[in-house]
Image (cartoon, rainbow, N blue to C red):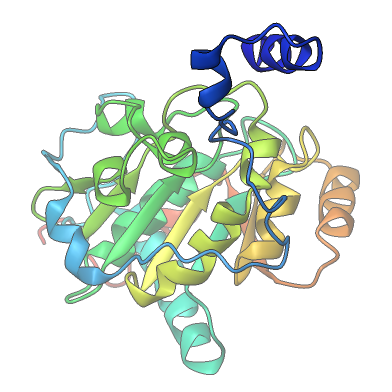
Length: 286
């Protein structure tokens, strides 16, 4: 820009040579000639099922500390709980448009990521169901560690135009689950999520995925989850038994305006309490 200003100053003083005068002054590419685009201009991302085949394949190798459930083991009580949650959500889907779901919590360490990941796994075990698991917690992303995959390219790289949508995905081998990791770290996640591309992403994902489940930051510690909840079809609030206070639950519900809260998942129940529900159906010999 300094060269342009210098050329204009010299032109006013009559100091430009014949070669310089013949060269037109170019407008920088990042400045639109006709002014800024209209804020109402729609964004088209052109996401469709055909592009999923281009997503890189990743083996299902969960980290030892990931606590991902073995949904092939019907005797595992926690797995049965997520199947129950899956059934209820699939029933709701028959009653209302429901494809994109934000999973969050009032505070950290209440089990939101655990719930989001295992719910996505439960949904992906149904035949002919494409499921997206997105790590929208750009402040403290962890899903890439749980699946032992690379963090980038991912969501942030796609929204900033650094990669295509299939390049940002990881297709988990042996199941219909696609993971969208957080991507390259960004300085201000809220500004990135406020981009029109983020809203357009929520609008177009239902054309490709039957379910898109997003892990987000805690509600009471950043505005990210509140923003994402306004874009999604529904929100699941995860609370931890013996840890989450009633006041925090109330504040979290108020921050969401209670408009699209699908329900509350209580995490941290004792295994003995859950196991007693299923002892009638499963004997030790089975």
